[in-house]
Image 1 (spheres, rainbow, N blue to C red):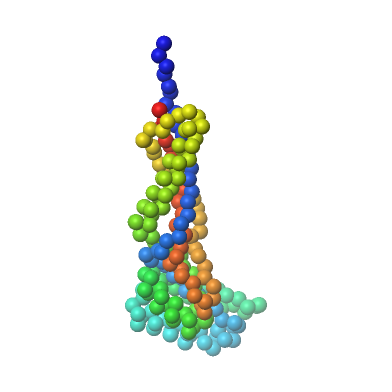
Image 2: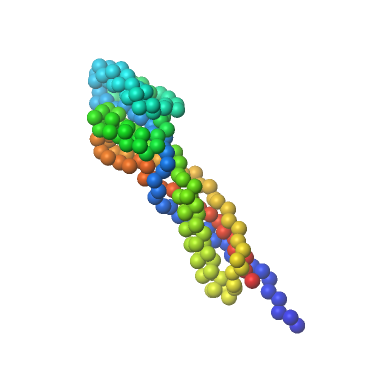
Length: 187
């Protein structure tokens, strides 16, 4: 009688996060004023000055939305400008923000290079092979050089919010994370 082995599969899920420097970010501006009186007196001039800065430096607004702030019973509306920035443009904006404390913001939607994404996937794959190999050894199996992988998309907020405008914060150093499910074939 001949021994026959049924092929088995080993499933491994690996999540990993690494920090990379994004190629671009979308920066959302925000204006903050200590009270409504200062807002009423200074907003129009501060907003025009900011828009002039964007125009002078060819920084493109990709979208504008309204934001509402309130102080007690008082409320005021200000625009939030969404601006696509590369690293040099971001540094220029940070220099502007250093002298304009009313201007804050957050970086959203970091875009990473293909090399950074490939490096993260490589690291995930190496970890998955190690974990699958450990499982195979415990079960007395041998891994074939054959596997399938599938990204598991998780709803996650990729925003990194910086401290007030007077503080330095590199919005381009952002976490890139991914989760993959691997199915390894065994002998």
